[in-house]
Amino acid sequence: MWAPISLSPLLLLLAHTARAHFHASHLAPLVALSSTALRTLHPYPFALLLAGALALHGLRKRSLSPSGAGAAFAVGYASLATPLSTFGWMLLVFYLLGSRATKVKAARKAELEDGHDPLKVGGYRVASQVFANSLLGAASSLLWRVLHSGELDPSHPTLSKFGARPFADGGAWCAVDLAPNGSAWSRTLVLLALGHYACCNADTLASELGILSRTPPRLITTFRPVPPGTNGGVTPLGTLLSLLGGALIGLVASLGLAFDNPACSTRGWETQLQLVALGAGAGLFGSLLDSLLGATLQRTLLSKERGKILTDLSDVGSHKEAKVVSGWDVLSNTQVNVVSSAVTAGLTAWVGSRL
Image (cartoon, rainbow, N blue to C red; front, side, top):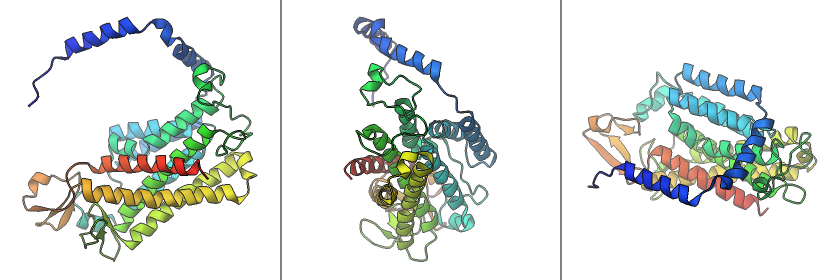
């Protein structure tokens, strides 16, 4: 056991070290940047209202806990409050489609998994679950706004290092073009969000609808049959839905850019098809990676008494006859989602930068 440690001396030491090594002048560039932002920041009232409405709707329907609603409002506003609405469209399509998929045959799912409550067919997501499926996309949107909205002076030393370039008049340059016609950072951030939401959407559809497949799932590592709902279990239906779910996010991104960014609409079909293909690939890869992590680093328990798969919401202690179906107890379902979506987003941006 680790011995208890008093934090007070440690905090005092850190404070003394900070005073010794930092001077107020070191923060001048950040203060100047902040003051510029405060003078020119656009509030985006429609984004504020829409994010608030979605959070309240989820709270009222009890699909979101109070912390989940707060998180949903934060990521919703961050994604919608930007001149490039593509980020917001990807989030909205993922949210609406995922919510609908969760409700499909909820009673049947409740017979297969202990965590499904037919009286709460939308689930009851807390902040950590909301952030796991949207934080990276929202952060990409927020950073894109900082670099390209024109609200901050692009000649500022902090911003110029990252290639800040205003996205004025609806976009005189395509947001997914590389420099010199576009911006490498803009393309990277759009592709990060695309890969993230493609992975999350694919995994949600594969999990919520693939569990209803008439074909028994097989564990991705050994291909042996496993009960429906087993982490790492795959079916042809779930795999197909992963591909289509990712492609749909790519299509949403391409249509959003075509309507919101005139410079992208003049690129012909090549750019649009490229985004759809990247989305499809990200959806398939991300879902399979999620299954691989679930089969190995996420423990799946089966209640012998009820014949149900136990989830993170289950009271494992009340199931004395539970047996391990697969995996080690290393990661939770939320942690698996974070890892798979982050890896997929990074890989999508890396591949997309080389096309």
